[in-house]
Length: 164
Image 1 (cartoon, rainbow, N blue to C red):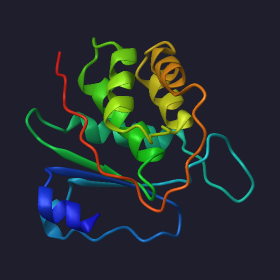
Image 2 (image 1 turned 90 degrees about the vertical axis):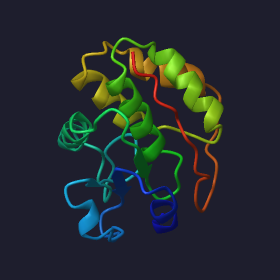
Image 3 (image 1 turned 120 degrees about the vertical axis):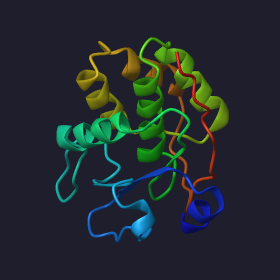
Image 4 (image 1 turned 60 degrees about the horizontal axis):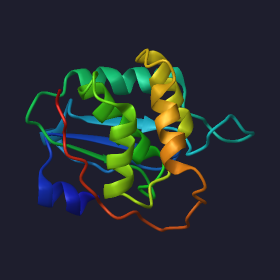
């Protein structure tokens, strides 16, 4: 991930890691521009695991609210297929409030075929953004029948901005 930051020099970074996993240190350059979220890549509460909660998504939406046109954002988690792809989907929906959630989900599937967006992240964002279930429906429609894939680290991809 540090190599991507060095190569791409994004304006903002979102890191989503398990509890007790150290976050990458990006230095003073990213002070106020590096959001760190801590929860496991689970879809529901389970003993010993920290699920995503409203507070996490509220922090995410607040961070996205400070994201300006023309700025790039790098989003990462451990494997790059669950939490980060869900967050990328949420970010694109946030920045494009009148765009079709299904079209955004299809774009995500096209550029990141291994993605398995964390449905809990999408479900909470859908509710907080008042999308009436359209976001979670889009993720479910485009991911039907996809099994889990084991990867050590995901393959970076770019989800271009739509901007209504």
